[in-house]
Image (cartoon, rainbow, N blue to C red; front, side):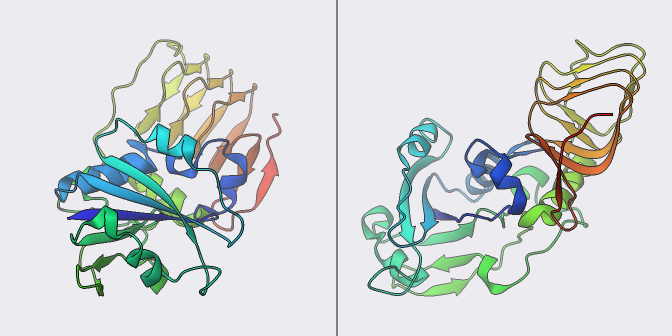
Length: 270
C-alpha cells in the first residue's frame, strides 16, 4: 500500500499569503501538517508516498526545493505536478492517477488531501469528538485500486480546510493531545501560564504577561508585560508589545486573522 497526497493552492485560506514557507509546514500543536500526515501513513503501514501539487495548466510550479526538503523523512517521498483541468491541457483525478504507474508498481494507494488528514497517528485509534468534519466530496479520501478504480475509503478524517477548520482543529489538538513539556527558560516567574499551551523554543514572556489557556506560540516569539493571549494561534515568530490583548485569533506574519470568516487586519500593537 502506498499513499498519494494532493495539495492545491488555497487549501488553508487566507493563511497562505502570509506564510513564507510551503503550506505543508504550517504548524499545528504537535507538529506540522506534513508531520500529521506522515504519522497517519506510518500507522497504516505506508512507507512510500507521492505528493501531487495542483496548478493551472501552463503555470508549472518549481518543486525541486520541496522535494529536497522531504528527503530523509520517515516516509520516502516523491513530488509531481498535477495540471488540473480537462484534457489536453490538464488532467482529471483519474487521469493523473493513471499516470502514476511507475510509482505505484501495481500497488493500491490511498489518496489523501492535505487539508483532510486522518488524525489517528496523533490521537490514537479513538478520535476525540469536536474536530471539524470534512464537508463536500472534493476532500473525501479514496482508494485507488490496482485495476484503475477509485473506491470510497472508510477511515476517519478531520478538516483543516480554510481558517475556520484550521483554527478549530488546532484548538482541539491543544485540548486533547498530551501536553508538551514547557521550557520555562525565558519565562518570567511573574508571568501567568494557563495550560494547555504549546510554546516553541526560545519563547520569552515578561512579568505580568498572561498566556493561555489554549495558546500556541511560535518559536522565538516575545510577549511583553501586561499582554494577554487567549485561545490564540501564533504561527510565526512575533513580538507583542506591552498591554495588548488577543483572544480567538490567528497571528501570522504581520497580520491578525479572524478564524471564522478569514478576515485579516494588519498586526497593530497597543
